[in-house]
Every structure is written in C-alpha cells, then in structure tokens.
Length: 99
Image 1 (spheres, rainbow, N blue to C red):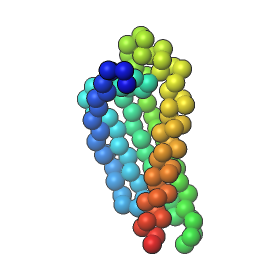
Image 2 (image 1 turned 90 degrees about the vertical axis):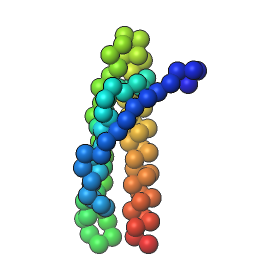
Image 3 (image 1 turned 60 degrees about the vertical axis):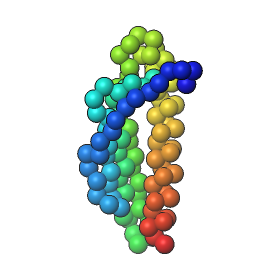
Image 4 (image 1 turned 135 degrees about the horizontal axis):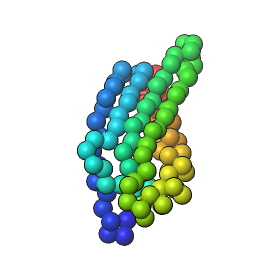
C-alpha cells in the first residue's frame, strides 16, 4: 500500500476441528485500520443437514493519532469485510468436509 508495509503475527488459541477456531495477533502488529485483534468461528450442529455459524472479531484501534482517526472511519466496514471472508471460508471448508 503506497510503500507502507504491514507486519503482524497470529497465534491459534483454540481449535476444535469442524467446530471452533479462535486466533489473535501477538506482539506489536503494524496494521493500518485496526491494531490487535481476536477472531472466532464457531459451528454448532443443529440437525444432520444444518448448522449455526457464529463469527466474531474483537479489535483495538491503532494508537497513533493519524491511524486511529483512519481506524475510526474504516474499522467497522473493514471488520464487516473480514467477517464476510470468514463466512465464505467456513462455508467452503464445511462443504468440502461434507463431500
């Protein structure tokens, strides 16, 4: 992005195959719109052919003034995009595992 680099590391804090995954940033992430975050995907079987999907993202805004201002404007739509990507990825994984 215009010569500005991002740098972050993540760690999986909980994983139950086909059921739950939780991961978060570690260290000092260098991101623009959000800072540290934790994401969660939870799949709850309802019937043999249906499941309830719960996804969540909890994030902090950047600390630096300029990036914090940008984050206040863009963090919510960016988080929505992240959650949409998580839904798509989870759907693909579940469909692949059901085959």
